[in-house]
Image 1 (tube, rainbow, N blue to C red):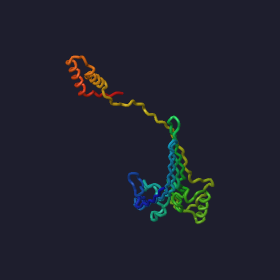
Image 2 (spheres, one colour; image 1 turned 90 degrees about the vertical axis):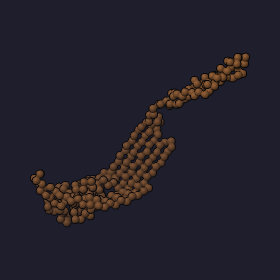
Image 3 (cartoon, rainbow, N blue to C red; image 1 turned 135 degrees about the horizontal axis):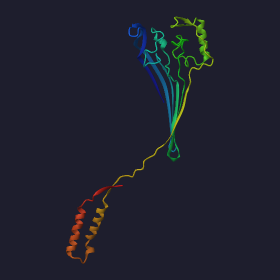
Image 4 (cartoon, rainbow, N blue to C red; image 1 turned 135 degrees about the vertical axis):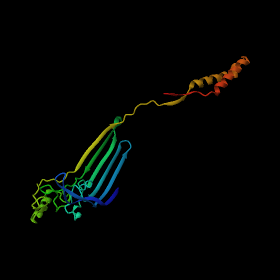
Length: 267
């Protein structure tokens, strides 16, 4: 079991400050000021279990409960999503589009007959949030939290109740129309996110090449000759022979005893 808390500051966020005329394109170009004013937060609790079975295999499971917040949907391209109110970045504080609150991964392997191995991985995760946009799709509804779908609103009934209260107050301001607009109701079957469920497995078998081991061996022929000459040098087997023959046999036996057998490599 383990836990983590991360809080980051001075992340970059794009603040649109206006536009200038571009003579190359013959039209205006947006000017974005990149500011190190964004923050991030991540909290998680992680639990892992492992059980080994000597004869059968192994089982592993890991569960993560987490939540994340930041100021932009894409912190790698901070100028792509402009804040609703550059003077009040707190309105951008919300979950990122890849925030998974719960994730469970179960895996392992099992030994099968004939040296086969079966290795499954089952991943289950909760859904990620989504932005709820204005009717023209230009930006999110400014009175809602960023990525409110699946977090602030979990079903169509909750969203329609919020839309009814907003319309009673005069609607929301839409910058493209430069006026307040009335939000339409959504379908009762609207679905904001989907959980993730994936099962993968692998069936494998290891094939080992059959190699004959290299083993150093001494030359046995030299040992055989040495043994034979030593037998020749035994005086009890040369009774009745002339002293000259006995002396020659002993000399040959001594010469072979001092020689080193030639080593060779055998398969």
